[in-house]
Amino acid sequence: MLVLSRHRDESIIIGDDVVVTIVDIRGDKVRLGIQAPQDVPVHRQEVYEAIKRENEKSASLDPAVTHALEAAHGARAHLS
Image (cartoon, rainbow, N blue to C red; front, top):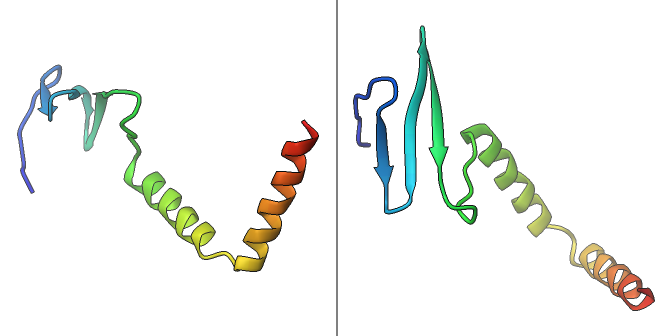
């Protein structure tokens, strides 16, 4: 892990197009501003882990349930 020291209003660059700026420091909390392209997802770790769990849960659905959902969606698509 790379550990950097930054002051308020200082930034770090990740790759060519992600900028992380220290916006505020209050006690033991740091507020970050993150500029990234719209196609780069940016999440707090706990949100990312929840999304990952939900995706894994969805991927492990019973194939019969998945087939029924696909069939229902296909039927709705033909009605439109």
